[in-house]
Length: 249
Image 1 (cartoon, rainbow, N blue to C red):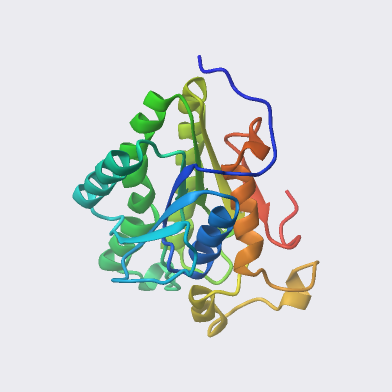
Image 2 (image 1 turned 180 degrees about the vertical axis):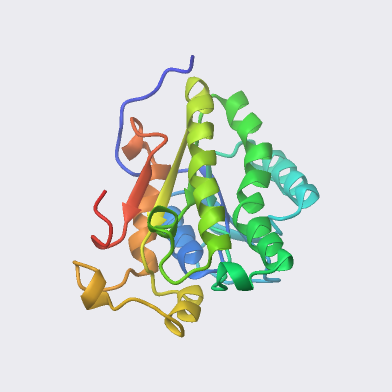
């Protein structure tokens, strides 16, 4: 069994971090937070290009729904950098359709990104981290999976619930090899994806969030940094709620 180190300051100097969904609001803030903490970040998304303005960030286009692309990019990162110390899974999409209005195509699209977009990187990175004897994995879940949705539809709730369970499996089976796995479950965060919710039945910040405002991407990014860093060396398999007090569990 790998010797688990004692917790230390939240620095990632010279660590290699891979971020999926990096062009989005939370993914972008997370990429920059990791880079500011000293990591060398490979930021990925399906966009052809994305600018981060930080020397510690390299952008690569990558579709998390493709098993072949996943194998290719992980192989290339290992060849170039030698290791993958942190895997941050931020890729996601949302649906608002009611159960009775949902289609097979919608379910496939939501599960493909939100669930298989986590499964694919995990299948490739888990053995890499096992060989290294260490690694931190953080996935974006959602408060929706705990309360049955905010303004999202059932396909999104189901996908995020599956991510919560999957990451607990990874934590349980990876612990002996120094692999940590946890989930951040954000409440409402003001991002471009959240704007599609506010056009429908979004909650009022003052009415439903005790801290009186919706989240910002940086609120989630700093929580991810904590779980991806040595500051959390005795934490694994947890679902960390970051929601302004909207859910007190």
